[in-house]
Image (cartoon, rainbow over all chains, first blue to last red; front, top):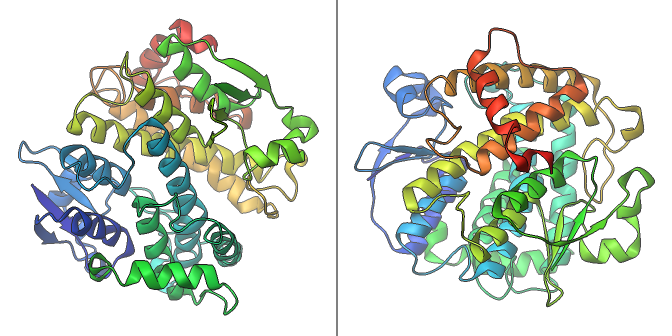
Length: 209
Length: 209
């Protein structure tokens, strides 16, 4: 198995943390997104959506998209579980992870990709070009503000995001909080539940991944 | 178990088709989105994100979000499998379903919610209000056009979207094709692979759900 990565990018970091929590060692190949290496024909053959992370299995099957990479690793290496142990836990974690992804991580992408000069004409990942929409960059920042407030409320009632145990939802949220700093949205001083949780998940060895 | 539904809406239809493919009968409660019933305190207590579908388990746990509802049903009622049987199949289906969801279904939502008069100030679902962005409605339609073309290519190399078997990715795509008609984006005459597949999945009894 090989892991296609790009160290500075938030998306592959989510899978790197997942791999670290599982205690796995996987051969890693860097894809230099700054130099558009994801548009090389060799890489496009592995992932026509032109993104990292990608897991290449030993039979040559390429798994792209963060959720699909995590799914493969969870099913192939079940311990410790990061996506739940029974139908209810799995569903609850998937529900929370969906919100971390859509309300948080995708809001961050919306804010960054519609604003950054280097992403002109590339407001969405993938094989098609889309122009930036400045109003969307503003909306993304507003959404991140709501996301932090809602997360603070949630973490006032639960130790981790999806319940009593650390899960993939915590990984998605941790990377989102760090990523939001790129567009200068940071937790507020009075979001003490969020800060308590952020300190705890950031202190895990996996957070350095 | 109870299923909170709204018959005319595309999102709960995705879970209705999933339930029909599993051969399950689940007590259904209609939530009248046209009359903003999702904002009633009783429903908000079940789903603070104010959406259907929701599955309410017998212990009172409420599972919202389409993917999480499907996950619960797949894990609790594994036959017939709609999300794969082994780590690789599960990951490949999740990868394809991600693209049906993000590139297709979410593009449709972007097109509709940024355009429809009845959704003014409600361009995103959830507890926070966001204004419509007309450029985003246009972008959503453009994305749907690309989505259909890419899907036609994929269905030229595979019987179903994620491989040889019908899966949740086909459900997401079928509902997206029907939903795209709401914003007047329809398959092109020369997209014959897409049309072959659409006829096949629409002819399944579950498509009436």
